[in-house]
Image 1: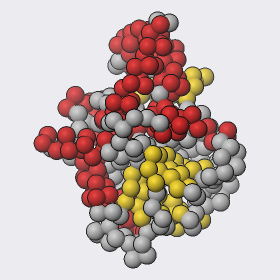
Image 2: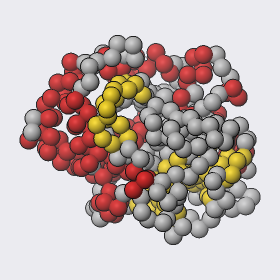
Image 3: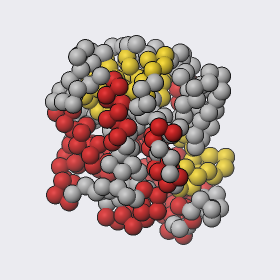
Image 4: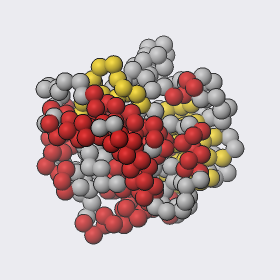
Length: 350
């Protein structure tokens, strides 16, 4: 499949990571003016930045809705790291809606959630395999986590086979490189020896250097990891995010982005704060000096449209209603550069 595809010549509504939050998606589409069949009276088109699934209660329904909108010609989507996890059978937190092996563990945080019918799972894989990792046109590009020229060139020249096959080939190169130094064996040993602690917020393992170094190696060698998970480096200290302890942290690749073409991304779990000048971030410190409605990067032409709706499971556990949530689903309207939330709030970006 072609891993880079062209955006339509139409005004766009670029929707951030949904993570199975179907009601938020429906509310946002309504506020954006879309009809039930996906048509927009002004000819606008939807672009999904990836991470349709995992953690939220309706991952299967979100994917089916996105598929219907794409098939109808009203939307496009790119792969996020969570879709790649599914395609490569990398079974992680929040994927119990699809993988039986994760069903029991995911009850703790995410139940109740719908599950993909067994007879539909291959159809889901087939749909996701057809999605690109980059969408672009002359005035804008969309990628899930990071755009680097090296990664983009690598996927642009990739042969037309399934994206999961490309991922496995590049991941094998990372394993081979780490295997020659003994790093891969140490990585597997740490994952086995500290399996319980890795997902226990209150019982952290020691800093696991092999996991940190191997994950950074993957990010360097596998261009699909770069595009869908970002550029990472060994963290200074361990931190708990996505319900597991992490030892490598994402970097602000946009500070080195020289191209003048704007890039819209998801992935990074920023938070919206309505008070201009007050800064707020989530998980890592990437947005600790970036205001909620602000473009960022060396040329202020990168915008993250992920406002952490994937953490709304925390509200349900605490008994908070969706309208009380600080976790939101957002869409960046292009070329207007306006941000629209599932609450109906419209704000200009700057």
